[in-house]
Image (cartoon, rainbow over all chains, first blue to last red; front, side, top):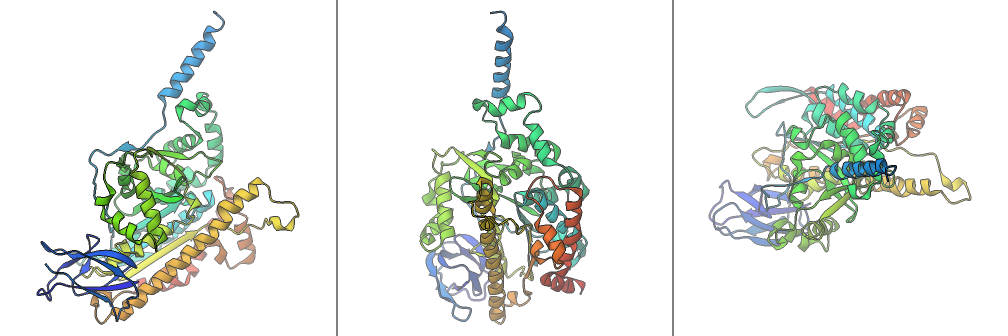
Length: 70
Length: 454
């Protein structure tokens, strides 16, 4: 299991879907449980950027943190 | 000349019969969804996910699976739905995904079609001598043998079996007749790739084909097409019309394929279907790659799998994950190592196609247990930061297996049950006697029943 947290600067506390490989999977700000390897991360907001992340060696207390600009 | 006329007439009629009675193939899809997506999350109680895997093993597996499902029907399952209504249900009626291989695929499909009239499947399949039906089906009606022998007909032993199951077990039901809940996964083996092929619209999308017209019986026949005894089932691949480079699931799998063999298999499968020269695919017994239908469940723990998305679902958090493995595997007493002479063809086929694969399946079951443990530990670790995981109960990983029969004599009798499509009345009675105990005695089932009482 790998762990990821996604932030959107300036949108703290908003209910925004995270897109993993362009599929909704969890919410912004929450620690997401995912599988190992490369994924595309974005959020369900217009013009949101998409980042490619390689998830490995994360733990619940040390998740990978990704900032998505939208 | 006059004497040869009847023979000429007979030959003409035979060729016409063979040519016009082509076997059933899958149909092309009218509107093809080009975006390949992960399978949909389907639940009745949105706090619970229940997966059931029914293994291969001929009528032994079908009978064991069916008895287990009948027992699950007796277990009350109460919950409150989203609207606040108290729902009184049973464990069987709450199954969300049912995965079947070979003999288990018949029980899985029949459960989806006939779960409100459980006696139908007993009468139409378990209590019948299917083997005799398959044998006589080769010779009756009289032109049947000619159809099988005539190469231009593309009609083979698998179609004799499919037609028998279609008319006498599944009442000509197609996938369009299946209810939306539970989701049925029937698995076969793609012979050329050595991969699993599941009869779902997600897989048929890869072939640009429409599953709804396809007979359920043909999927079960493919899933139980044991090599040599039955010929493979052929499906038409209408795919190859879309560039794979536009597909996110393929692209990301490609990136991960070097470190992840499952992703590599996925890429090879996509490349195969996208190659227009691969117009046909041939399927055999699903047990050749996974005789317990467990890999399809393992996949749901991975990124964007059904279990994975539910774990991250903050709006409808997952409370209860139940995975049940009904495994009809037996340990044969026949050991060729007691003799100096090398095993014969029959024993070699048995060892390579069942014995060694049973060990791989057992490892898959261990993998599911480990993944479920990992999920639960993660949920404990994240409870303070992710309240949606706070209610997740320790997953219930339940195994119904003859290996767990406590009585030595009964267990020995179970291990003697054949892998065939015919069981005697006494053999069925033995299965009906041991399965309720196996269900009652499983430690996770005891824990689940304890929770369901409150």
